[in-house]
Each structure stands twice: as structure tokens, then as C-alpha cells.
Image (cartoon, rainbow, N blue to C red):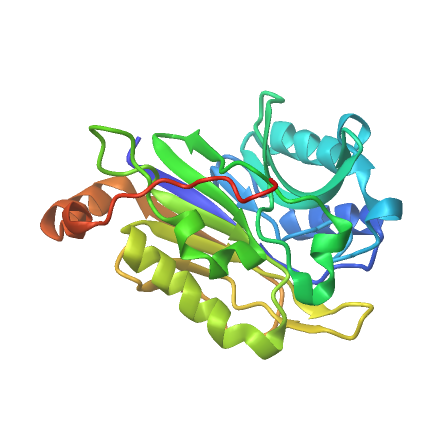
Length: 271
């Protein structure tokens, strides 16, 4: 496979109301399925909004209504669907990005960089591992919101004898409107420095804390060019195509990866 159809779902969210958000998203998604797309991407904490009320809102992983809803949607639409939810697992709370496939399989990534300006580091546990998933011949690195500001965590770390670790970076977010310029800039920067596609999906509207979100969901190619870009503050669904042939051709034509600095990530002290 050389192409991956990817659907960005930019939407408003009901505060701490999973059932309402599930229903709203079903209406928004309509009849979108494998005839139209391979992958549906929802915003960060799509079931609740960016809540710090983890003790009340986080759902046990094995009993999570939102995880079950993702699995149901993936099966019904015969495509992968992903987004993050508040999860309780083994006595800890996580902002967890779920990757649900049509055959019922689940993979996940726990947000590594917790937004301390909102107290997220006091309400959720820090993820310890990067997560790369595969779909139709594409390798995809999962990430959540504030992770975008930390390029070392997202930098290509190919195995010995390989040139690239992933082909696209996915970032789901609740990124407030006052900081929209860094969001847009960093999406393009991550694409350029990693010679990879970047997909950023953000929400719109206003949450219960009075924070406004401008959306700015984007699909950026490996040269930093925007293939999908809606700077207006409004819900939308748009599907873009990631092309492996074009990606590989550019990587060969412009082999900046050959001059990259080699490094390895070490655990933080105390983690």
C-alpha cells in the first residue's frame, strides 16, 4: 500500500459528558467509513474535554465506555479510529491515546509531557514509552498535545541499519486559542525536521473553564507544506491522503537524515 486516507475531526466538546460527546461525534461522523477513509482522528480527551477532574472522570481501562465506543465505531466503520481519553489503570490515572482497529484490537500511548500550567502533572501519571503503530504500510508515532513542544521525544530514532522510524506523526490536542501560533509552527517544524507527515487534530469552542480553542487542525507534508488547514474556528471533517511513494522520493532526493545526530533517550531520574 502506498496511500493512507486520514480523516481529521475538528469539533466542539461537551464538558465532562462522555455520552453526549459520543452521540455528537456519531452524528458528525455520519456515514464516514472505509469507503472514504482508513483512519479517523479525534481530539484529545474527546469524551470529556481537558478535565483535571481525573478521580471522577477517568474510566477503568477494562470498563471504559469511551474505549468500548471507539471499538464499536472502528468495527462499524471498518477503519481505525483514535483519540485520547482519561483512563484509570493499575491505580494510576492517564491521559491515554487509544488506537482502535476494526478487528477489536487496542493499542495505546500514555501522554508523556503533562501540562503543568494546568496542573495536569498533579492529576495524571506520566507515560514512559513511545508508541508506534502500523497501518497500510505506514508507521505512525502517537502523541498528545503538549508533547508537541518537545522535539527530542518525537525525533526519528531508527534502529540500526534503518533510516527512519516512522512515516507520520499524529498529535491529538486541546490547544487553547491564545497559543495557536506555536501550535501551527510546531506542527510544521516537526514535519520538516523528521522528514515525515504530521497530522494535528485540535478542538474548537469554549470549555467550562472559559478557555477558547481555535482548532487549526492541520495535515502537513514532509516539506512543511499544509495539505489540510482550516484556520477558521469551526467544526469540520476533512480527509487527506498520505502518499508513501512521494514521501520516499523526497527522502531520497533530500537526504538530510544522513546528517542527523545519533542519540538515545534515557529515563528521567525517578521515573
